[in-house]
Amino acid sequence: MRSACHRRRGARTLLTCALSTVLAAGCMATPGVGGVRGTAPSAGEPWVPPPSDTAPRAAVAPTLPAGDLQARLDSLTLADVIDVALLNNTTTRASWETARAAAFDYGSARGAWLPQLNGEAYVTKLKTVPSQGRSAVRQTIYGPSASLSWTLLDLGSRSGSISRARNALLAADWTHNAAIQNVVLQVEAAYFRYLATGALLDAQRTSLQEARRNLEAARERHAVGVATMADTLKAGTAVSQAQLAVETTQGRLATTRGALAVAMGLPANVDYDVRRTPGSSPPLEVAESVDSLIARALRKRPDLAAARARAAAADAGVTEARGALLPKLVASGQAAETYFANSPAGGSSYSGTLAIQIPLFNGFSRQYDVQAARAAARASHAGAEGLARQVVYEVFASYNDLKTATQRVRTSERLLVSARQSEEAALAQYREGVGSLLDLLSAQSALADARAQEIDARWSWYIALAQLAHDSGILDLEGGSPIRLRSDTTGAP
Image (tube, rainbow, N blue to C red):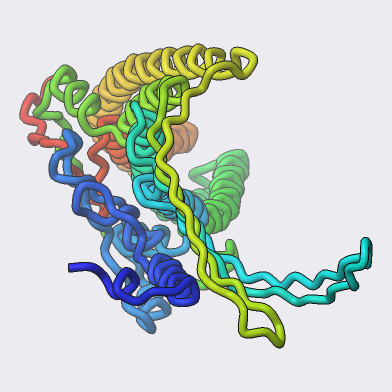
């Protein structure tokens, strides 16, 4: 059945149909890939690849309910911190908009399969010069016209262009996913540093209380003639040193708090707080081998998937450039209505053409375009191969960093136990009058250092775990560990 545009004759009707087609095309949604959305639903969510893609389905970030933000800012968990960051971070917003631009470029490239229809309305006013007995003529001519051009057949130019745009879209979407994982890693690291600084401040306040108790004990012993004034002065010095450490860490806590706010995409001076729960010893052993994590990274790293998509786009660029050297079969036509002012004369006109366009010579520019596209494709593949090697190294390095962090947790816990026992023994000896204040202060200084090292080792372990998950391409968007772990049962040094 022929369409209404074909059943109804006249160039004016043809122009109306063309305008309706253009308006309908402008209302189309973002083009999709493989039956799924062309971009992520929002700037705070990762893009989900088509089922046919070899890459895994990406997790979707939780959504922050409107109006609940301020209540959650009073006591944020790690999942809340990541949630707020993904909603406010400008990096993910920029990568999302870049992916949307690539989606519309892909939709534009697909338009090459369809005919190109253009309309025109004209008015011509003319006057002739009287000559050879003919009088001057004044006339106004007007009317609409429409032209159509449709490439019916080419040998790779359009398919190459569309394939290049599609792979550019895939690269932009994977880059958006990589930006989300980078933001999550940045936020988790800032979160753990803030908690570590807070735990260190609590430990230093405990050391300050112990130093003050020692000062009171030294004063009492000096008052009864058991201790010298030097002991009182040494105890006072220890109190001042502990107080200085507390004040220094308080400043660091404010700085790390601001850094966490910025990582969440909020002003550094925003009023918020993080829910602090007593830290428990983490599972220390990774149940997966480094080879399995490397294999997962080569499959799931979004930045590597983006590099591979860019290489595929470069290959499609070669097809597109090569197609420009080959003939095309093009159909074209034109229809117009002509009217004369103050005259019943006028009528319709049309023309149609079917032509084979053969590029013969253009200064070898098309040949150079093919060679440039091939060189760009080789460069893209080399870049993807280099990134794959870098991914292997990053996983290997972060895996060994996590093993080192695990050993640090074990050693620092043993050090803390030993330092605490040493401090208790020195304190008991000092109270019984058989130990010196210098021994007690030395033991308490070692205990304070052991507390600080244990705190740093414990929270650094969490950062190392997040780094390994990021480098493996499986970082959880809610703050959990996607890497299989098992508890440490060795108990050995």
